[in-house]
Image (cartoon, rainbow, N blue to C red):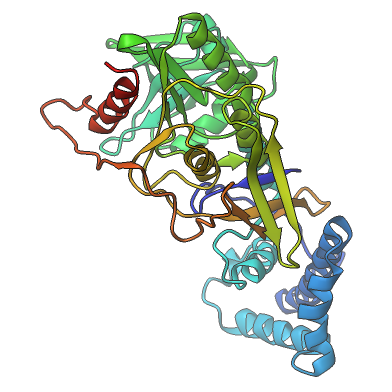
Amino acid sequence: MGQKFEPENELNEDGTDGAADMPADGGSAYSRRREFGRGVLTGVLASLLVLCCIWAAWTFVGSRLFSSYASGTVSERDIDQKLNLINALVDRYYLYDDEIDEDKLIEGIYSGYTEALGDPYTTYYDEEDTQALMESTSGEFSGIGATMSQSIQDGTITVTSVYADSPAEEAGLQEGDILYQIDGREVAGESLETVVSWVKGETGTEVKLGITRDGEKLELTAVRDTIQVQTVEYEMKEDGIGYIRVSEFDTVTYEQFQTALEDLESQEMKGLVIDLRNNPGGNLSTVTDMLKLLLPEGTIVSTKDKNGNTEEITCDGEHEFTKPLAVLVNQNSASASEIFSGAVQDYGTGVIVGTTTYGKGVVQQLMDLGDGTCLKLTIAEYYTPSGRSINGTGVEPDVEVQYIYDENNPEADNQLDKALEVVGEQLGQ
């Protein structure tokens, strides 16, 4: 499924998947959990076996899991007996016995196993999580092309932006519209996540939006389509300095970034500021392809796995960017953002402005477990072109500037002003 760099808190979706075999008649609560306990063990071992087949990681499972069986530390029988004992105790004493969701208990075994590794970046994703993850990494989804936010004070859900040429725009939806109904379902009291799930749906289907605009209630109908997340925004600033903001590195980001560069070049851009502040990361292939539009010939990034095997991704230098460049970063610029800023810094292609980055210098691989779920596993550490590891330390800016909020002018951005100044100085302005 490709490599992906992500910070610790990037994804927060949840869901359920899988169930242990149950007796045909349903059985007693105890007997069901007795079977459940055995099913859990089978599920865990089966999940690990699938992982081995897909990732050829028998060394990991054999040496760390089954070797402990052989050594006598723990056995399959020990696990079976302990799970059955826990289930029996839950069945006999647990106060909320009738509220138990056994499917979730099984998912909890898988999640708990990965969490016990103690690595904040290694995560098990159930079916729903996996689907959301694939959406987020591709940057495409089926919807109407509008973003929304929910008020902390009264829970109202407001349209914050409408994508150009989107189904939302065609339906007449506008920024500032307040949603009160989706397909006849009342929005009041629902979470933002729930309302967004109502708006999303199969491409080509209709969704009716009940909105309030300037005190008037309106009903709009949008036809869902495949939507690309706008991960790149750009404009030409004063004195011929281009500005590109990249919010994350999804599959769609490369083409959006390339379009932005070409458009700014057509406007006779003299210098450029690339803003990676609060960018949590994304796809390795995306960030390296973007850097191939900027860097000279040489290594972009290298990785080293647990066995000391190294891999390099290189640039041919055919599209080297030679105009003045500044890259804006802050403490929330993570992983792929650090690949980008670290490479630019090492080659001297541009000046890094802002504050020290997050410091996530390890690689995660997304592994398909064969049943609609997946595992994100830390498999390697990465190094900048000069051989630097930034894991735990981050990329330090060449020009350090702390963001200062101006309550008299909330739109003011002293960090961006400094980056523009740095490019301007290189232009002799």
